[in-house]
Length: 286
Image 1: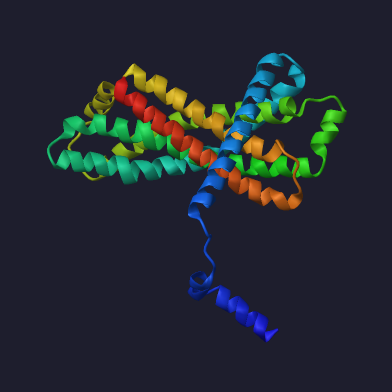
Image 2: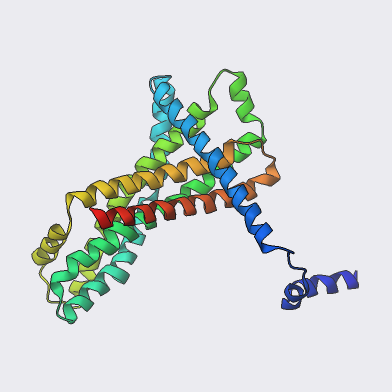
């Protein structure tokens, strides 16, 4: 027993890392990872097409059951996150918007405040912060709930009763998370801009409220509103689809739930980063 404890201590030290055997070929390791990621992406794409197909073809099926479910998941992903979204908006406003306004007014370029805030908060930080919040607070519990339901045989029970699991379990969550990300993004951006100006006002920055909002209005274009809506909807869709896919699309045991949860988080983050990079390219050409 003493020898076993000594081995445990050795493996918990840095020496264990140095003594551990390294893989023979990193190319082989990376290749296997890429093949696995490609296969997962194909499965996720197929699951997304199935979900969207069910959403369109069964839009009027069982409205008495589906409408309360959609409202429930929309409230769960949106209304319940309003307090935390408010805290993040205030923190972002005081830490980023307020300091940006104070700095640019201090160096003599207040006419660039609107452009800087639109690029930083409206285009990038607001949508990403909202997507991460919904992923952590709603996406992760969704994977756990659906994974445990699949492991407990509840999905097979729904199929035995003639109920489409995708229609009953996935569609309300997809709609709820997408609407929540869209609405919370607008709420967070407005809160951050207002809190930022309040912080600048408390610092005695010589910038009138009318001038502040005039610069924001001049910096915003109709393309910003359209692309912001598309980006937030895209974030909501990929988070919802990745979460539901990892929890529902394959047979699971209870011990697999933790693994698929971390996989869903990583997949959602990568998808959100890819969408954000795509929109950066779009912003350069509009």
